[in-house]
Length: 291
Image (cartoon, rainbow, N blue to C red; front, side, top):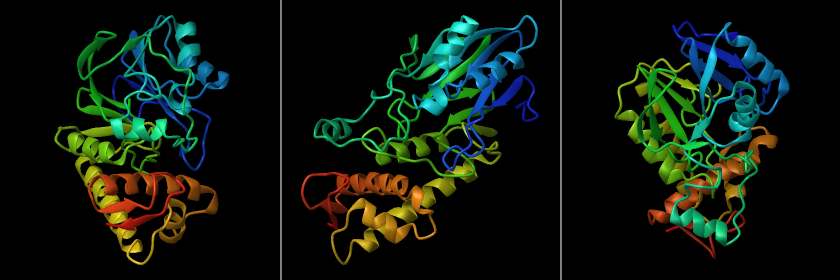
């Protein structure tokens, strides 16, 4: 499916990978005309590769492929598209990079991720730091937004920000340690709230036409969730999974493991702020109490 969301110079190609975690699929954005930029090529699926190439007009050339982060539903097709289009892949870095010292320590101690689809083979041709850059005759800005992943980037173009999985209108992001970091995620939300933008275009779901309002909702949602966690820790130490089952009462059982990863991210952040404490080493199976 291709469309432009009503924005001049912009085309959307929706990947055929719908799921409870991807909404109707991954949004692959084609920006510009003539020389174009592709943002988030999506999953490694030959049908989606064909759809992206078919969305190009006669004579158009892909100047660069930008990747918000190295989860397979965003970066999986990058290599195949790069080969087919003869274009370089630009991103902040690889999937395991960009972790804080705390998260590096937890990973070294054996804390494994939640299996949210890390693209461990992904390696960009060019690493983007914060700031402006040119691609396809257009100006973009790379905005580091760690939290969902340590190397997550948002891309600003004119008055639009492509937000990947950091800000979506239909759902909040999964923050799964050690790749995900709740403290970094909250700081990245604050960073985006300080920028003017007319719309956010996420990696899944519809456009966000009230960026400031949506950012405020996400911050409030996370603060409410941490308050629920602290309240549940009043009585007895509990693991992340036990807390998720207690707090996420309306969540389908199949999604509770992902919810538990979010809870663990909150527990690590609360512990770092001196509000909670583990009964033993930090980890998914560790009980936590209120400090």
